[in-house]
Structures are given as structure tokens and as C-alpha cells.
Image (tube, rainbow, N blue to C red; front, side, top):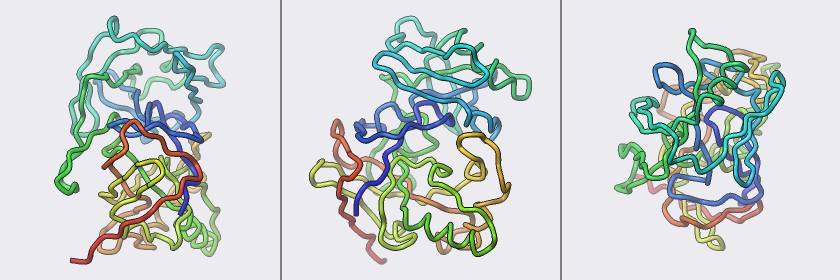
Length: 286
């Protein structure tokens, strides 16, 4: 089994960046969900509320984050290293209260101009502080301690090409359009041998890279997977959510599931590369 894609999403719910090599930190891939957009209530905002967030292009330069949009005359340039001058805010992501660094009035004005005012609120860009730790809910862990940044809940999302092939075959059988892997916003895509076999995986490892990931929870999907990740438009508003529910990809669990949430077991400060061979440890039957 090999890695076929590596992706990061520097700003939560904006466009992702495909990589050939990804550096690993304690929270996941470097710069993944390192920034987040919030509203006037200091609560996170995603494509669930603002589908047009998919239209914002993201680049990482050596010393800055750059955001671009067709309606903006100039890109937004957010320089790194503003920790000493950036105000600290208390922000809310799901049920977690976190501290964040405000990237300033220029970033707020730019985002509000290109994305509007959802529910009348201005938008602001915040960054995850280097000295903060956001622990992953231990309910699905195996006694480990793990952390993440502004991701929904886990350090990595792993998906399988074989599972996407099976989903698209079912969509085609129903007369629907196939969907690309970008809909699912994964960090790691693997070849896979059998559709949805990943639900039986306990660990993925690269002996060459010295990296081990623990797969800890199936990823329950929301309406974002119905939205094109370049336009924000939902061509078939209930798909592929409806078909995933019908396929019961996670037996015994209600809902639409695609991919597995994972944590880092070993390999901090190492790298994964597209093409790396992975080994699988399977779950033991109870």
C-alpha cells in the first residue's frame, strides 16, 4: 500500500494545498488548520455556513500566508512571527474553548469583503498559538494522549482510493455524477486494496519514515462533502451524503461515514512523502 496524496488545509475550511512531502508535528502536518476564521461571537466559521469559503485560494510562502480571491484586487499577505504584537482572543471551536492570536484588522477587512457578513457578522482570521495545546477527546483513544490544532477533532484524516471507487460506482449506478477525493478534504490518501477496508485498520506505519499513525474513529461526514471544493456550489445537494448512508460504510453506526480519523503514535519531526509504502496493523476482534 502506498500514499497517493498528501494535503494540508492551512486555514480551516478554505482551499487545501497538495504536497509531495509533508512534515509532521505533534498536532498533525505542519500548518494544517493552523489558522481559522471566526465571527463576532469568536466562534469558528466553515463552509457549512459560508460555502464560498471554498473559493479562497491559499498559498504558503517562506515567511507568509497568502490568500487570493477573484473578487479581491490584491492578495492578503499574513506575515509569520507576529506573536508579540498579535492580540490574544478566547475562541470557540465545537465544544472547545481555545486561545488564538488575532491576525489583525487588514485580514478581517479582506475576508469580510470577499466572503460577506454571515448573519451580519464581520469575519476575522486567527492563528493557533505555538504554546497552546488542544487535546483530542480521549473517548476513542486507547489510553494515549494526542493533540491537534483547529481541525474538527483529530490530527489526521486518512481516506482510501478504493473506497472512493466504490462510492463513485454506486453513484453512477444511480445515474449520479462521480465525486473527486477533494470533497472529503483528507490529509492522507492511500491506494487501498478493498473498499472501506480502512475501518478494520488499527495502525498505519512507514518503517522507512519512522512514522506510525493510530486510526481511532470513523469520520462522520456533513454537508461540506456535497460542495464543490473550488466553487462552494452543491451540484447535487444531498449527494454523496445520501449514498454513503445507503451503503452503510460503517456497520452498526447511523450516518454517512467516509475516512478514518487518526492520531500520531510516533514520528514527530519526521516526514511522509507521496509514494511512501505503508504497512497496516488490523484491529483485533473482541
